[in-house]
Length: 297
Image (cartoon, rainbow, N blue to C red; front, side, top):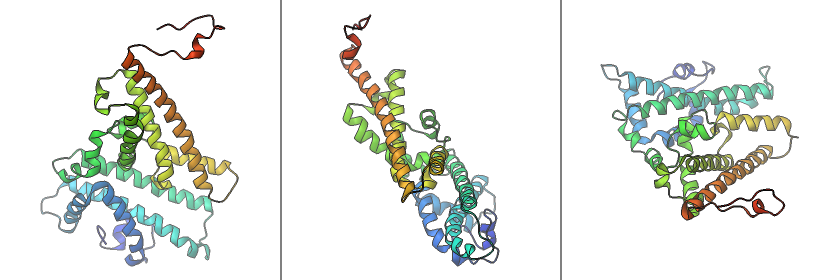
């Protein structure tokens, strides 16, 4: 198994029985590896794997740290899948856990994945010479053409805990939002830097909210930032239990976020019209005869 020579190597990061055989985690390793490859790319993955398998005589602190982050990510991802599969056997013994206890354990591992993945991506981003292959991945190159180009900026318009992991996972959604929502409404993304603050605010807000809306439909629970996971958890507690409840809540969140995105998009379209005509088009109800004032252009 990549990055782990024994079960003790995995137990450095997660609490699993020492008697567990490596083969028992193989089914969980494959999807974990696939998720990691999607983010960091095959070349970077193999670079780190080669460093792990044949460490150089002279230590490389950056590569050593990257390998450790990656090990932690893989171990926590594997543990979640193994923990879920093991629950049926656990419930047949005295080791049975309540549902809320299982949820808490899974939540801890999700938080660990996010923390380690964020640190890994930030490390790769800050060492572009050493990790040049990462800078050339499709996801990394796509960021340059986006409206919101990094996690810290995204966090200013919708709270994602400045997560580089979520930002990287959602780049393809933002690219779709730009093409399907912004460009069709006359937004020229390349000209944004020269626009005024109101324009930038509206476009960033519309983009961030629509990305989050689409993510609610497409992502699994563990792939959401803490803010959305908390909303889903709170709603699950309040709602009456029903079939496919999680999907219903995610669809409800989608609609709420999408509606907010459309509000900001409306503001953006007003600014585009004003920019094109040099005047602001007053809404008809503003100049109603019953009003004590008139809006003039």
